[in-house]
Length: 125
Image 1 (cartoon, rainbow, N blue to C red):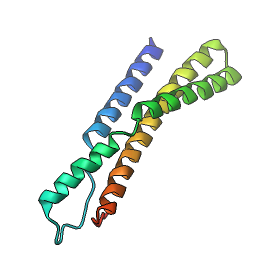
Image 2: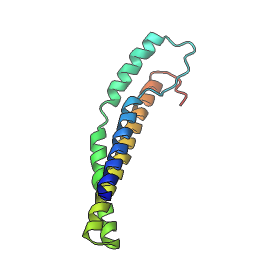
Image 3: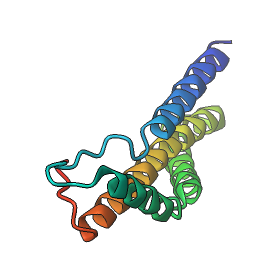
Image 4: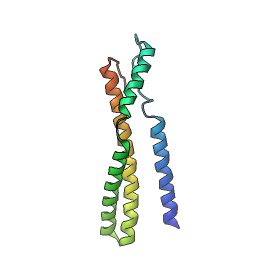
């Protein structure tokens, strides 16, 4: 029972982290707006976000989840029995997925920033 509650809590945290990243993908870029045609900026921002959409976040999540599960399982097997290994693999997989999600969305942000800089905007963050 305790293991299920812990797994449910971790699942809720992962889902909320994913929702947070979806809400803020590209929204926190700050530019110097002095002498900027905001209509053109919003068009450029839209195009830059389209480029960023090509970043395969799902692939990064899957890769990190598998890596986390393997490492977690190995550590669990070293310090405990097969039950410990299975739990550690699950926790490692979840933590790996969270890390992969964060990396994927940071890469999307990097693409948008680089694109805007390439179009002549002064990106401040």
